[in-house]
Image (cartoon, rainbow, N blue to C red; front, side, top):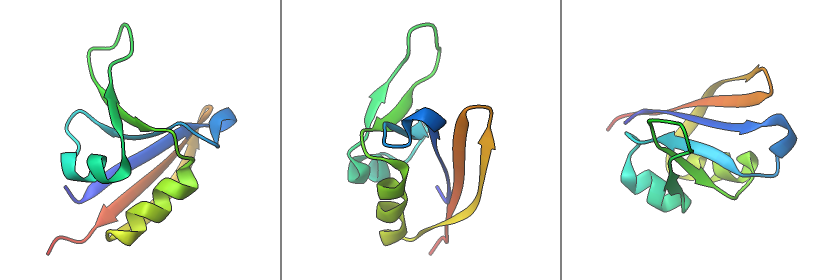
Length: 86
């Protein structure tokens, strides 16, 4: 999967960091040490890590992901990353 979103709440810039949804690449989630959770009331799962976003972005860069854009949405920071397909 060449695209990925990473996000965190503004007051939680030291973690945890959301790194994927239930359809994310399991190999990448394993590499990040992410755990899959379903919040009460949601009908979907998300992957989270305890690392701050900066460390997550550094790890993803090492395996070929590049930040395309970043934005703030309400109290959430979101990064969109892309990895070239081989």
